[in-house]
Length: 118
Image (cartoon, rainbow, N blue to C red; front, side, top):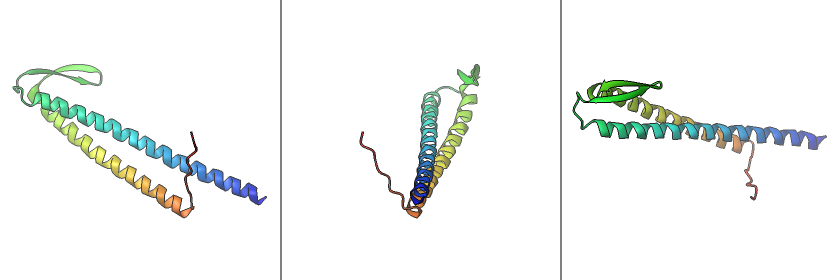
């Protein structure tokens, strides 16, 4: 009977651990996506900023290509880029917090992760 209780406890610990790992992986993936989008904004801004403000440029908005001028697009891209940087900072904070939570949980429950040989 006691071994069945231990087995159930072990399964609960394993499930909780997998949930933590899954959440961390999802946050890391979102961080990667935001970093990529930030880099794209940076490249576009570097390309557009030296150009004359009245020069025609095109911008994709929700799958629709719109015609604008450089002076209209650059401020929008800067605002978006700033928003992405703030979102990235938040995601990194979330990741660190979740990682700390997992470490506290591991210590509290005396969990040691054993890597399975491949």
